[in-house]
Amino acid sequence: MKLKSLCICMLLVLWGTTSSAQSKDLVSIGQPDSIYSKILNEERTIWVQVPKSANAQTNHPNKYPVVYVLDGGVHFLSVCAVINQLSPGSLPQMIVVGIGNSKNRTRDLTPTNVKEARGSSEWVKESGGGERFTDFIAQELIPYIDTTYPTASNKTFVGHSFGGLLVVNTLLERPELFNNYIAIDPSLWWDNEVLTRDVAAKVSREHYKNRSLFLSISNPLPPDTEKDIDVLLKDTSMNTEGLRATHRFSKTVSEATNSTLHFSYKYYENEDHGTIPLISTYDGMRFLFSWYKMSGTLVDIITDPTATAAALIQGFNERFEMLSRRLGYEVYPEEEMLNNLGYMFMGNAPEKSVAFLQMAIEYYPRNANGYDSMSDYYASQGDLKNAIVYSEKALAISGSEYHKNKLEKLKKK
Image 1 (cartoon, rainbow, N blue to C red):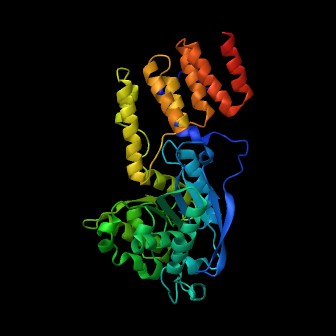
Image 2 (image 1 turned 45 degrees about the horizontal axis):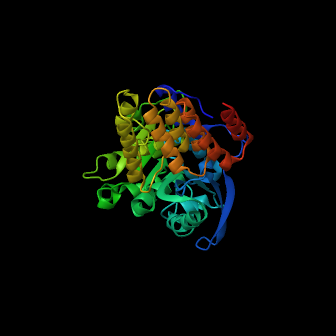
Image 3 (image 1 turned 90 degrees about the horizontal axis):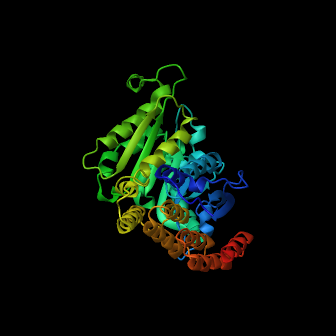
């Protein structure tokens, strides 16, 4: 069913792309859902994408971290695209929840009420509903998602502009609500930079430990004009008000004494407020999960031809113990990864091959693929009896013509 051998380079590529395999329905991303909020007294539209591997038959429940995305009608598809492209090689597979807006976005996403902003009072007269909207997320939306979809405890919050403002406010006021935060060009100029006032003291508190924030800043000026941020920071016009406020917040957090927050920010000199979300999501996810991609000791062991099967399995187990610790729930190896490793070692290190294929069967006992692969292993070793035994097991599970024909060919040998 798989190639009989794979070089290390090809295997590493496969680990980065297994979840990106094309389906027959390329335009189907997520599904619409809705929830009635008693707190907001209105119906809210949401969009949800669940990894296809949620349907895999295993001997353990498939659970996934959840990414909550504000302005879901605008950003849901792009966040899904980034995660689908990068997982499971560089990111864990994740559920994505896009949160739709109501008619009053300013009300929902601003943390304080102001009488006037940007020279006008009409558009901000109902501002300051951010805490109430966060109550909706914490008390209604998250519990609904947790009871409806296969979620794990790890959660990420993503927002752009006013959405980024709410993301930062949630981090400062309720850091326990999410593990990770991505604030994309947030409107931190709001209410005379109210969120910057005591941020240094807040992020030095113990409960910001194991919390992460990635923040991005766009260039507010037209293309082919000024890009140097040091020059822009000296400008006093309204054009650069947002950049100056967000940079001031970022510098304050970066220089905070004894900060326990894992924090990074980036200025994108060639991106404006409208073009910055996609690249910020990509860079933000890479920052938040920089420890996820396989590297270091395990790669050294895999590429070392003298490494024993026991050392290889130990390194493999240590990686998933680390992932479980960092993500806060039990993480299991992907079936395709185990099968690829089994085939990679089948020709020159059979003891390593059988170890990984056995793991595939143990983790995915109700899938035919592991038994089919084990059948190939025994056939490669000249053990026809066991090759037939495992081929029969694969056929019993799948009932497919492929496995039926393969078994008949083995029996004729």
